Image (tube, rainbow, N blue to C red; front, top):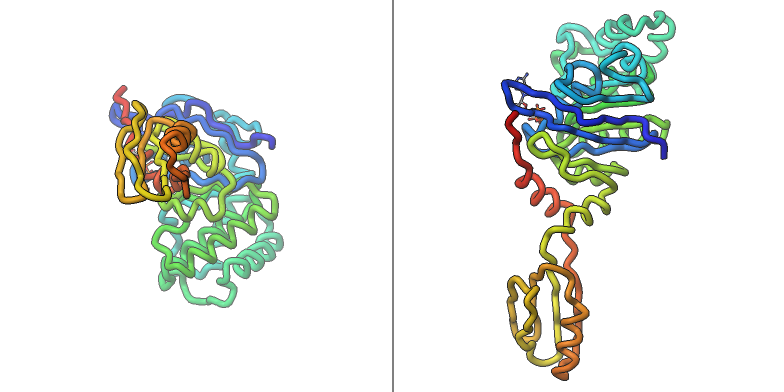
Length: 308
Ligand SMILES: Nc1ncnc2c1ncn2[C@@H]1O[C@H](COP(=O)(O)OP(=O)(O)OP(=O)(O)O)[C@@H](O)[C@H]1O
């Protein structure tokens, strides 16, 4: 897959502290990329630099081979952006708000009217006439999405789009993201909720304290993060489980015919050999897979903030 969004050592320093620290990411065309990290990790700042709103202290970002720092206007033409906490004119309707934004894209009235009608229908706001001031958070988010799609962008950046939405709103949003991907758009969206990201993303990047700590498909990230972790092995035998001796065992819990072993590496073959030699029959011997949730939680407590 061709890489269409790329950052290289993207860095932002605020008051001597690196809010974003050498972030290098690559996202393939048509992918849905989940940018995952806890509050304050640097997601908004990274996206701000990627959409040309925040000037980086260092590093580079390309969208579709356009250098965003050097040609921000060119990049904005093919980019849609839903900021965290999107703002609208409270006394105008959804249509009037979108009409106002469409002027920034230099769209003709006929073109924008047709596009706005289609987008309002898509986000389920075509029948709502009241001013946006009376909208729920979910409705405002959906209107924000329509605004982000006004210029029919190839690249869509969504900053915490499901934050504060009720479960039904989250499902609607997820479906719209899937639709956008099916239309061939590349979607980059941030979240601090792992489940959100797992449901719709082909690839994910985890940011913690300004640094990327893992990147790849959900499976790859799981494996990558597990590499320097201890492994957990579950054993069940017929009869009594004997104590095992192996210098790579970090801790062990023995209960009747079973044991849970934490070791520095996968030692199942050696365990199997030991049990076999002692004449013990194995009923179960398996490696406990770490869930992506556990990987995420372990990861976010690891990153270090680097002083300049
Ligand atoms: N304009 C600014 N001036 C100074 N510090 C800032 C500024 N913007 C962000 N920061 C700091 O940079 C760090 C990263 O913030 P950022 O908003 O990018 O994180 P985030 O992952 O988007 O979190 P959240 O989900 O809470 O918005 C935080 O420590 C924040 O306080």
